[in-house]
Length: 47
Image (tube, rainbow, N blue to C red; front, side):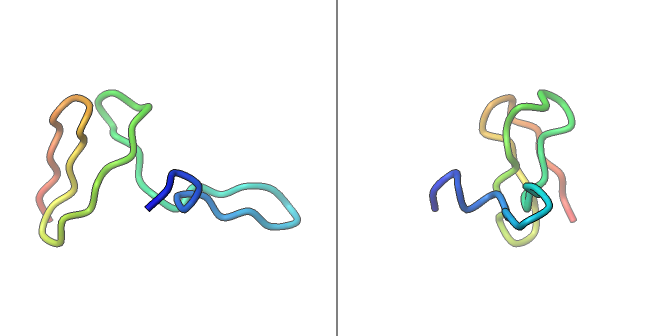
């Protein structure tokens, strides 16, 4: 998956389709079924 897949562009602008890390803010969270994980700082959100 390329970084461009994380955005949805339309005529009105660009929308981010992935959740960003609440701790470091500049990294997208990887989705692993039962959790979301940040590869930058190690933040994990269990669902």
